[in-house]
Image (cartoon, rainbow, N blue to C red; front, side, top):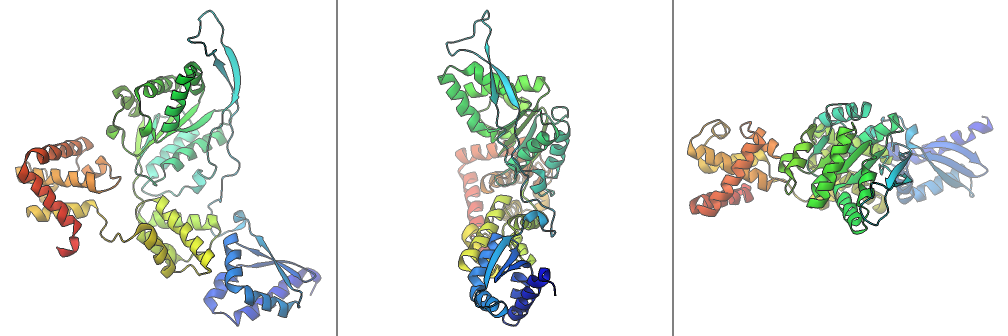
Length: 475
């Protein structure tokens, strides 16, 4: 045996000793992935998949490791760890990060003195500024799990990335509930554009930040500079645009929108609701939001949730069994953010408490995060409850019947879906209840509210139905 291979033989000897002292599952999970790197004097260096892996080893098997090394090497034995770079792991193709943050070129912006409106006979000054695109490299397409819930948005985003401002998808309006990946998708488009077109100026900003910047510009008498700054963008991404409230800030944004759109620049917006549901927005601005493509991100299905968990576990360098991932994907159905939060909490609990990642531990952790949601409200639950209350069939409820009882039952079902289910869009409710459009659902909700305020019997119907939904186990 050569000196170069001595560390391999020593580690193989250690594995034999360890394998005789712990059960096979623990051995395969925590010792098989370790690679011997070198042996210098009495110090053995091994490579482990992640910091989490190292911490668990030391917490759960420190005494066994110490005695094994002393037996294999001698009383002065020491163990050093190297964390394996995620990019060298071959299990999956998801990158741990995208690399360096994207950067914009320096941009020249015309500025005016803060003494008031610019004089037409005085040439403005020119200031060269570095615009930070504010894109998080982790939010790249490589880290975005695609499924039926976001397929259309990803496809549109990839088309935009290949030709920003030159596709029919301008503006791109992405909407859906929290944690469904709106910010990730919007930033992924920006990152991809910066990779392909490095000279384009990209900016990510939230609706609230735009509003705050506008107010600061007005107070500092720098509104002209503020407008000049935003009109220099080639790609403008506005996240949570529903927060862009206020007549002044909306008027400023309207002018920025017009200038960029007419100049062939790309606009991307995200919102927690569809354009038609935005309140306190100027009609001329709402109509522009609808010019391009509106894409709804919906709740991920089981396969997409499972794939996301695999990807995140890989990025964390953590070995999690399919059984545990399956449990998490089954238990948490709401959104990606809660799924990731549950996985990170599970890893943290296992690390800090020196426990294995098991289904039992996952059940304990998720119980504290999401609580018991076995009776979580759904469109099907509401429709079934309404049908039972009015003694009608589901087919009758979703039919085109104009009988008064059927119409009122249908309207109540739509109203309850809108009020009882978090982040359920009007279009989704309409599609599930008779294939109606969002305008019909809006009218139904308005009608129910009016009747509840003026009709005592109707108000009692709604109250009875809501009480039935609160105690489904008694029915």
